[in-house]
Image (cartoon, rainbow, N blue to C red; front, side, top):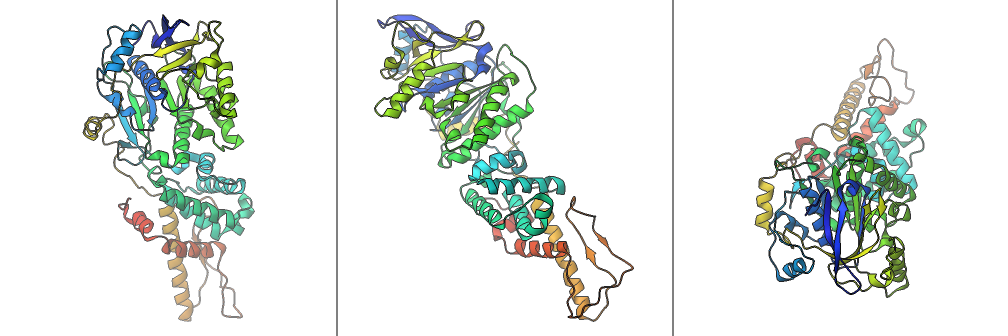
Length: 518
């Protein structure tokens, strides 16, 4: 429901429980970010749903995660359930019209929506370190790996590419350390073990091509409504770190790719980060600083970020200070930490002389919240006790058949549903290792036959020495013990060849045929 550039949230109540006035979020402040908090079962998901509906009707694309599986109903017409109709009458919402919204379903596993992926290179060493919970030493090795890949022309697209590069680094740690800094074999081994764990947890589904294009989550329909991208996250939540890292990567991509727009009349995109505490749990300082930077600066890109979590203490103060629009549902206050959370939430609002904010927070009913949004020149409005409006779309999940019907007519159908495995680091290293092994075998055969060699062949990874060449016009150095020393790169490539040959059969077949996928 829109009214002169405003998004209707609900209607506030006076201390005597009589209806007061409508509470709105001004679209021009929609990119000033927001916070939705409250205990389980107090109505946070419904608040997210009605905000997504309002932004969509205003022509603003929305991205949100469906953590519990019940947000998918936003793609279907609402039902006139008794308690919804009663709420509409209670707040004076007449007429109470039902509506279905344009939805695009996404799923990292490709089961409940279109596949969504990125490449290892686009993820970068910082977020990858967070995903693996890497130590400082391991993060340093990952940074070196990305440096070697960049300089060596080795595309890192999926996990097998990174594994192949780490194998090479581990076998040649001494030589590479002289050029790039100390590379610990134990750190390389630890990273490889973490990658295997990630693969078992399904992270391999996230890395690869075709990678997600940001423009595909910023679509609008022919009638001017913003598409609502819903990420199926019920299964993804079994790996909370992957969930949080994926959303942070997406947020970072928006920040890096979108142009500056200043303060538009309405946001270019609104991004809801549900279960936001997962982003900050045990996060290193550098990551929190990165999040703070993105949240602070992405506003000028026209993107509004809304964190949804149970407790305002879940969000660091530096980030909390950037969130201007706030909806606070009920909190419980039994433990000291919960009591502190209530005081924190109350202190973040502009006080209302009609009631004690801290006392009201613990007594709010389901579907009721304290609301404060930016108004005027960007100052927060006085906090009001508000009855949240009922949604126009369905309250509850879609059936599997309904979801599939929406996927079948999706504007991105066919763009992301098939894997594409082009030549990358794994294939390049395998090919060069095979060549080196063949050259070594040929040379060994010549020596056994008593043939004299006039030179030796050698090759290097692109970017780490001269191109492959054969030294001519020089006699082989005499060997007193029947042994001729290999060059560093010959030894390295023979080592890589042995490693690749002994890798898991599934990864090997997938690298050669590009057809085996889990």
